[in-house]
Image (cartoon, rainbow, N blue to C red):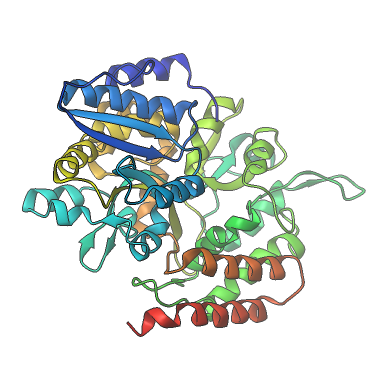
Length: 435
C-alpha cells in the first residue's frame, strides 16, 4: 500500500497523536496488555495503530500496551493458537471476523459482553453498524469488536465513461446495466486484442468464496445460517449468480475469463487496462493516492437485490487474560473505536468507518467534501451480509473455492459444481447440527 501523503500524516498526528517512535512507557505497576495485529511492521496501518497506542498510553498511564505486528491473518491465528494458555501470550488480537466459530471451537476467546454487559456497554456495542456486528454476535453474546473492516465496492474510471459517451456520474445499478456499460467500455483492436476491459471482478483461488458471496447476496441468497451449521451453496439463485460470473468473461466477453488476482485488478485500473473493478474498500487509499484521473465509488450492482459481504478484522479478547487485563482490554477497545479515531483510521488506511457517528467526525466530514462518493461504502452496509462463516470454516471454504474454480475454468457446470460443494459441506457440518 502507498505511504501516506504528508497532509494525511499531519492530520492523523493531530487526531491521534505522534505517528513515529515507540509506545510511551506506562507507570510502574501498570496492567500489561499484549495485542497481536495482522499487519506488517511498517506501512500506514502500522503507523495508524502505533499512533493510537501512543495516544492511549498518554490517556491511560495505568495500562501498558505491547503491539506485536504478525504480518497477516493466518499467521496471527497460528501464533495465537500456539501461545494459548501461556503466561507470555497475548490478551487481545485482531483476527478475521469470519474466524469467530474457529476461535470459539478452539476455546480461545471470551465474549466482550461477558466482561462488560451493562446498559452503557450495549449502547456502545450497538453504535457499530449492524452489517459489521453480524460477524460479532452469536448465542446472544458479543464476541468481537469491529476494527479494520471492509466491503466490496465498485470503482469506475470517469474518464473512460466520458470517452464512451456514458454519464460519469451514473455507474451501473443493476446486473443488466453492468453488462451493457462494460460492453461499451471494453476496447478491442480489429484483431480482437483487448486494450481495455470494461470490467474486472478479481478473484484469487483462496478468496473466490468472497466474490461468490457478493453475487449470491445480490440474487437474494444467504450462503450460511447464523449458527454456522448449514450452507446453501446450490440454491437456484446461487447457481444463477455463478452462471452470471462465468458468462461475464466467456459469453459477454466484457472482462477477463477465469481468475484475476486481487492485487492485479487495482494495477489494471490505475493503468487504464480496466474501466471498472470490484475491489475491497481497503484498496481505496492506495488507489486514491496513485490515480491521475477522476474516478468514483459505487455500491455493487444488484440482481434481485443489493448485496455484499463484509470483510476484515475484529478485536478479540483472549482467554487467560486476568480480570485486570480484561478491564484494560475494554478500555483499549473503547478508546480506539471512538468516533474520531475510527474516522482517522479510515482516512489513512481505506478501511470503512465502523460506527455510525464516526461519519460525523470533523475530519471525515472534510474528507467527504473532497471525495463525495466515499459515502457509498457506508450506504452499502444497509445491504451487507456477514462474511461467510461456519464451523470448520477453512475446510468448508476450501470445498467451495474448489467448486468455483471447477466452474470458472470449465471443468464442471455451475449447478453440478455447487451441488457437489453443498454435499461435502453438509457432511463436514453434520456434527454441529446435532449438538
